[in-house]
Amino acid sequence: MTVKHDITAHIIAEYLPGTPVEELDSSYDLLENGVISSLELLRLIAWLSDRYDIPFADLEISPDDFRSVGAIEKVVTRFEGLPAAE
Amino acid sequence: MIRWSEEQQELCRAIGEVAAKLGSDHLENDKNGTFDQEGWQKLKDVGLFGLPFDTRHGGLGKDLTTTVHVLEQLGYAGRDSGLNFSVSTHMVSTGVPLQRFGSSALKERYLPEICAGTMIGAHAITEPSGGSDVMGMLTTAVADGDDFVLNGSKAFVSNGSIADLIVVYARTGAPGDVAGITVFLVRRDSPGLSVGNPISKMGLRTSPLAEVFLDNVRVPRDHVIGAKGAGFLILDHVMKWEILCGFGIIVGEMRRRLERCVEYARTRTAFGSAIGSNQSVANMIVEMRIDVDTAQKWIHDTAEKLQSKADVASDIAITKLVVSEANVRSALAAVQVFGGYGYVSEYGVEKDLRDAVGGRIYSGTSEVQRQRLATLMGLNRPVKLS
Image (cartoon, rainbow over all chains, first blue to last red; front, side, top):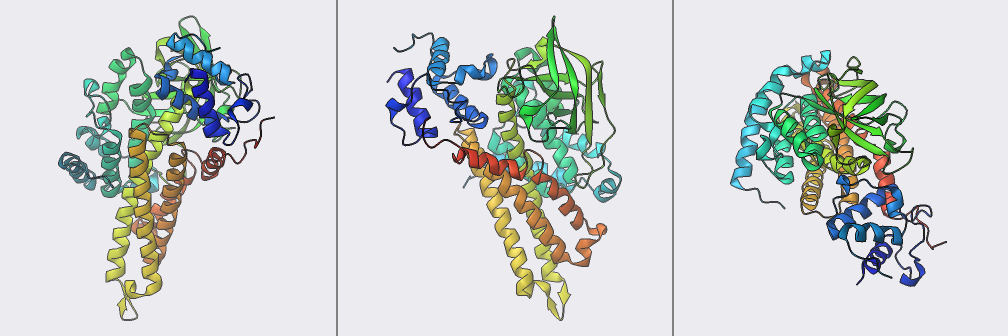
């Protein structure tokens, strides 16, 4: 499973249950559209931190880093030094 | 159910013995709003403040569940709820964020003082205009050379007037920006920082509460805790500890109150029999028992989950609600059980009720916790993608 698929699956399971995976475009704005609130953003960051071992509190982050599946994927792959999945 | 080891139980007994000797003048201190310096000194001497912190920095290196368990014993044995509250505030406001997010240099410099209790900690989060709306905070921090310059004011800072170190949450980004809050460790003696007089309040009167004013306070960049913009994450971590430690203490206080009521109901007679034999009185005490047991289970369960790195976003909100609401019910029932003796100040029962009310407000009000739960349940989330 690619990072993108992993993130998409988690967001659908936790925040958009019942939504078909193909319906969640990687550029869909999760914050602007109210899918993820500031409180849930914390949960998402905590999950990413555990899942990919990223010490977010020691990094300078921006809400834009978590705005969409694509943005999150870039943060994760940037930290891991892995190429983003096509 | 957690099975406590012999070592954990011994630690509890030791803290309990010390705490039981404190607070002989807690009613007088409550009346005058006086912080118990002598009590603080004794708790300092027994090493309580270093419980969860690294042994490298002078702590005892205990885990979260042990810390909560021992603090529960402090609540049970120590009669001064305000002093207990100050202890929890000291540990979670400064030590907890420093240990988890602080640089090695900051930890080496300040954690030993926090563990020893030679420097008292506080945190400044709430603002006069914002209440629980942390994202709406107005205090700013602007980078300037090797420093940040802080301006603004903070309301309701527990330990404010006795603190040597204040962890200040300030805005370094745009309003509403999740990554717009940064955390600073600020020394009380920093030029431009001033603390208002202790604020008189309904309960927890022996725990000083004050306003903090920041007027061009220069804080070195190396006194930032975590990264710039990580304030919301740090606050989330601190709040979890604050709720578990602070309300763990309250569970102990509820247990002591229950035992007082049982004893009183068994020995106080009216109409020729003990009042506890009256079903309506017994029922109140039974409800108190159910409340304290439920509160304790939530505290222990959530502490264990957090310790195992599970997602406790919902658990922490429920725990805070369950314990704070149960505490008010229990304290009100105790006043009723004690009757006239519960209503007058001399027996300290009414003080318990005044002390309990604040728990529904600090660390996120009951309304905010319910809103958090509603959010986490997806009640205000779109059903379909737009």
